[in-house]
Image (cartoon, rainbow, N blue to C red):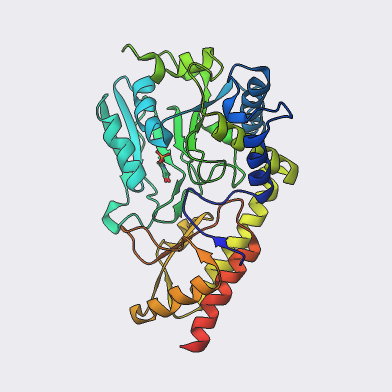
Length: 354
Ligand code: PLP
């Protein structure tokens, strides 16, 4: 039976990417060797790393603009720490829009003063704070573009003279914007790129080298830039799969093309949530995420029936995060409109039966 994978991550990747990735595990580039047994310094893998890095910059429209792309390890959570290690001298601003933002704040507090410029904790992070003041003396301002757990997404980014740092783990490459407004972007691979194990970090080089502390090599962005993202053995398989996904996206027409599909998917699901009296959206409408739609059943007694119907339709990964409850439909780039259609059919069938 065809499965419809709405998992929040690790999540679905395009079928053709999965196929090429599995072939490379058996025989990479016709070398008679697996991708995961060749040297990361071999010309075949160096070409993969170079391609992945340049495709990332190209798709984001950041080529030739002073940015470097890195594929690091340690997940997005490692970046919570590395951002502060490399950029926080005195004071940084953070917008607290959810669990992940909160975790990044906790790490940054180990390195200097952290000012929460705004927070939506008062309403269980169901909205994006607006109208907050950004002081002029920040070393950087840190945002989370998409809040995976709560299903909120920043639509309009604040203007500031401070370097802008953004955790885009759950919406990178999903919508068009002027990416040059950011000085550092990071994203764990396991939503819109590839298997967990690598994190894309895109840095405007001129923001580095301004803190007085000594930075251990593995945590130092400059070291990783100097070594072309090969300071230590990179996560070869996740980097290769990320490269394949970025190629897939480029062939599809880039971010503009996927954004159109993502908008149609989100529109389809949110209109069902709004029109079907059995469901209720969690996030404030104007802040709703195109990637993660969070909703609850208006009558808890229908839960078993709805869950069973979802199972029968091949729907996977719909459970909400424990801090929100209910359901979360994650609609990352590789999820088809057809899969969203299947979910919407099940939701309206539940209404017909109730
Ligand atoms: N930031 C966001 C927005 C996330 O959604 C996640 C994980 O889901 C993380 C950070 C943490 O990522 P990792 O598990 O790669 O450390």
